[in-house]
Length: 603
Image (cartoon, rainbow, N blue to C red; front, side, top):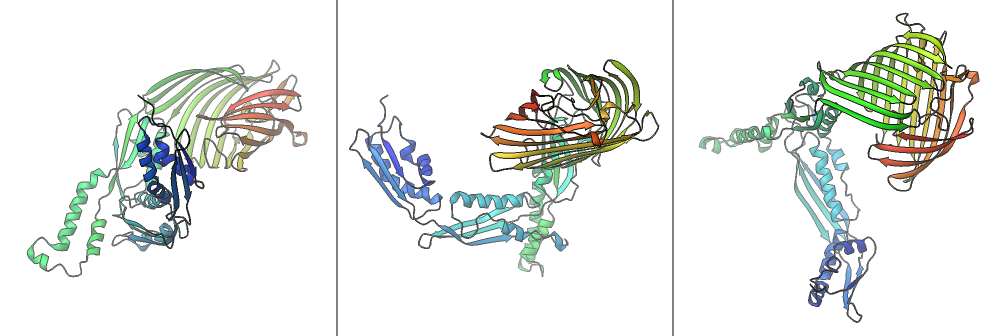
């Protein structure tokens, strides 16, 4: 096939109209097309002015001066396009008419819809440049704001934009009808085979009679997805279930208004108006069943993995989960690392109707960190509740521990501590935060002489602040502190003492390297204090670099608190599973460089 006619196009128009024409003009789109000949080129040149006027009108310019000329003097024909857009058309008067939105008869006045807030949210105000895309977006946003509330059947019954090229004004008219007010009905579940309905019902905070709310549906769906029981979850209001009832209600309302006999048709009931009949019809709208469709995850799942941590060395892991053992969900894991080996098995009860997440578990861990070898067996029970914005928990555990320091066994101990914890989150993103804060606080201890060798009280807090500095930079500030009170340290479980150093602590030092020196070993102290400041710069949306300064230490007395500092540079990557951080840090006290690798952030 012969090549088509080759030609060039030169557009002289202000931004962003030049890009609009380059992307949509036929003369640009058909360049290089094998079927274009001279006759077709001349035809596109003739129709180009009308096409240009239509395109620039979508950008708010309705009186442009357009010139299109074909220059055939050179080897390749050249199309010269000149566009002077002139004065843009701006929004003049805006008429927004809301029909409906009144509470049904018998409902209190405080059920009235906030019409003023809806009108104030209109996205194309007086004086704005009238662009077609903005006009369509404003209408969609207005309708979307309503259908997510108790009026999901709302409709735009009329929308007009009258453009006056002489005055350069666009007069807008929008009529929005609320449709009937709808409410949730009873819960209906589809797809359950292995698991009890209580797993879904206990997470349902929507009660029959509640106003329809898209946000409530999404929150319920999110809670179900987080359980781990389901591969897919769809939560919706079952509109199809009430179509028949709606038709019957409408026919009944019409029959009441007009009558079904000739006598009734000629003499309607006194006092009955069209508005009252419509209100009665809306009030009689049936409730929408709350429909939950799920696909269950397979009951049993096993996985194995290999890895490496700059904190604890090489890692091999084996996990086994079972979603239904005596009605409980089990999660178990065996992890073997160079410096730490652990095994645990936890059993999770279904979430209660009050929102409590209860679990029990058993674990064993052996660690060899900085010359201190500990072996801890534990049995625990935990109750957690709250939302991602505020999580709370209460944990009771029994620990039996043996400890060896500098190759000398120091004995064994047991303890029965109770700990209360809270986590506050206020972030713009849970996966890649750039603004906000996270605070975690814990208070607990073992005060009663029951299965406890040494009574103690312990407090701990950690906070991370994210603050943006323009579109490509942000600052991360981190601080943590802890204190333990007891007559003697001997007998307090090592996990309740404090040490610092490592990827999520003071970089430039080995994992838990900062603490109390006992011979050639490092042990935990009574007090902890660390802080960090990090500046990140993002060269691309997913790639960045950082500089940081960390400081902190763990001690037995406050007068001995002398922070150890570390500082360095790092690389950042926003991976699909979270931020990956690679840091090269210099530990000032040990005068050594150390490479740190971490995924995500603590909390």
